[in-house]
Image 1: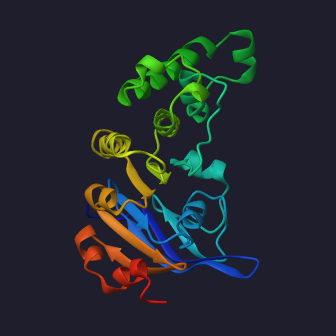
Image 2: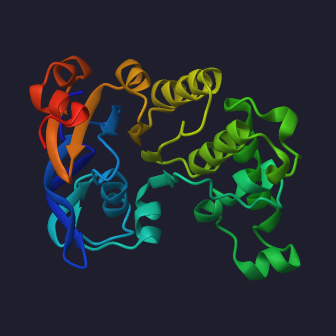
Length: 257
C-alpha cells in the first residue's frame, strides 16, 4: 500500500462551546486499507468522522483527500469527491422498499434533468435503467435479493444495517466511513457484516474507515488502527502494534486517568 495516502488528517482540532472534542489529531489512511478508529465512549471518534465528510469544519488543521486539501467542505461536496457515510443510528427511509433506499445512493450519478425525468424524454429512460441496474448489483453483492421489495421498516435490525451499507455502496465511493456498523448486533450478525466489509475492500477496492467497539472484530478486520482517548491520539499502527501499546492499554483500563 505504498504511495501517497488517500486520506490525510493534519493536526485536526475541534471544539463545541469551548469543550475540546478532538485535539491535534494527525494520521493517514492508504488506498485500499481498512482503518479502525477505536477508543472509550466520548473519545471523539464520531466527531472525527464528521470532520472528514464535512459535517463539521475543524477549528484547526486540514483534511487531505485524494491529493486535495481542505479546511471547510460541505457534506455534498464530500459525497461528490467520493466519500460515503453510514451512521451510528440507522438513517433510512423506513417507509420505502429496500430497492428504493439503495437507489437513493445513486442520486449523484443521475445525468438526466428533472424535466427529462418528469416527462420521460431524452436521457431519462436509459438513465433510470442504468441507476436501477447499479442498485441491483449492490443488492446482489450484499445478498439481500429476497428483501428487495420489502419495506425497510419491517425488516430486522441487522438487515436494516446491511441496507444502509448498500445505500452507501451504491454511490461507488472511494472512501467509506462506517460509524459503528455492528452496534447492537449479535455475534452471527457481526460475522456477516465483517464479511461484507472485507468484501467491500477486496472486491470493490474501497478504502474503509470504521468506528467499532468490539476489539475482537477490530483486530480481525483492520489493517490499521488509530486509538483515541479524551480527544487525543494515543495509538496508531497495525493491530499487533496497537495491542502492545502501553498507552492504549492504559486508556482502556482507565489507568491513565
